[in-house]
Length: 346
Image (cartoon, rainbow, N blue to C red):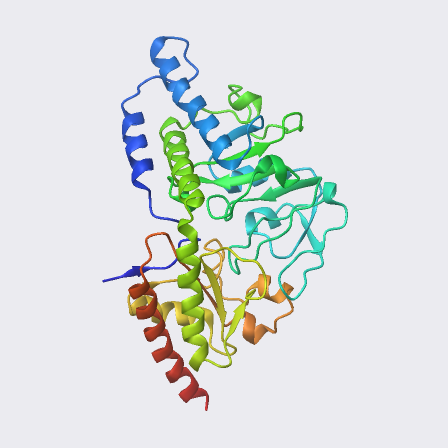
């Protein structure tokens, strides 16, 4: 039976999100229509907007629905000429100058926050950043739902979030904006989303996003991720007993509770991904948007790792439903392949 250990790429759809989406499918109206059916659809969108704001601690901020965090990044960053470290997701890196220094623990040294973008947590290493007051933009995609945070207290003027990272549907995200922050529309037309993003609203997606965000906030408050963090630590401790040359990137820093970046010099990450896939385990060699490209992780390179180590990294990201037995099965399989790698390299 296969084991899914790639939750940072996408999380399984939550039951609450599925139920909310099915209910929304029966609502026929266009949210921009003034008749009863349209108002009913509009109510779903506006309720979802408020639920997401509440879950993110962004009451009073504007939640602008987009097709995902990538579009939210373009909406937030285009034309701003911001600076960032070379650890940002490709969706952010495409719009910024990646020239801020990064230390060996993956922490970015920010100069003028008002001219910088800084992610809350890295999707590959799990390393969590301290967001400075006055920060222009933060990619909160990986941290939302896993870390205790409040946008209103984060210091950021804008935040990027995505539904499918916390158990909502794929294809919807949002840009969260402090009220009064100027955002120029990239998609123009009907004037939806407060004039900042034209196009008929994704009613079904918004309903699922809100339900997932609400459920994720409850899980976080209930301490559900503490168990996941203990499983992550158990995995690393188990591998470390035998794999003496393996590095657990970011282990000395604050990290996402579910993320382990495991780097073995000389053993290519994409090889490990294929070996584990054949063994029945879904993992990745980095961000899902770049892991298919055969190259050393630029995140690890920015942290100062040599290419042989950066190219030998895999990411194991656990979920709330991950079981200890599954983690130990993975560890056993990975170690079996590790022994073969060491024997070939000897």
